[in-house]
Image 1 (cartoon, one colour):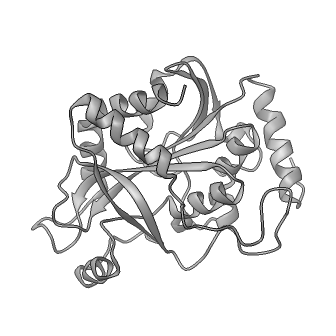
Image 2 (image 1 turned 30 degrees about the horizontal axis):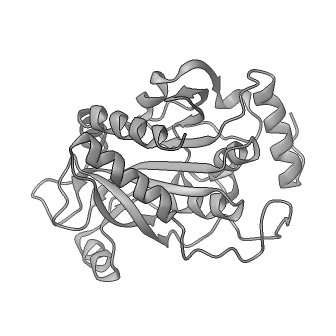
Length: 277
């Protein structure tokens, strides 16, 4: 299928493909990072649509990312979950990286809950911690908003002073307290990748104010805010960043730690969604 060049028309075409499989109108868009995609399997009345059946969403090739959109219900809330994402380091255009999340907002979601597996830059963070993202550093060298702006989607110069919605962050904190575990907080730095950071880069990131680091999320947040969606971000700290532990980080460790914290992660997402009713 040849896609139209106009972004709004591309979103309409992708939305038509989704609506042909499901009439559900999502309220919450969920982006599930490495090792966290199993949450989508807990949705009820679910319909799964492979990315290759949705025009405009590139295929997922990274281990730990299933590569499908799952529409269903959780805690009484209508949800559309991206079970895996694509990344800049795979060679994709920034607009393609964020197309899936733009599509979910286009379908009706007004809340975007973005998650990732991240390295701990702050030495007080340990593998297995869940970190509420309070702000971000876009160090990818690009933006999903570069190029002509379509005013039907959002303003040319969207403000980012509250990139991560304060009310949603408070809801997440309340949910964690109710579950009896500590939700850490900090700034997420998004880099291009795919190589892990050097110890010198980790020291630089800490100087810049980062608490965690990864290779995703920051462009998605820009796109969601551009379209007016409120954003909540969660990092699963899967490893200590380079230079903070004797072992070098690796992707198998990332997936293993994410699997270990799945119970807390699923419980926290449920507590958040219940409070959105």
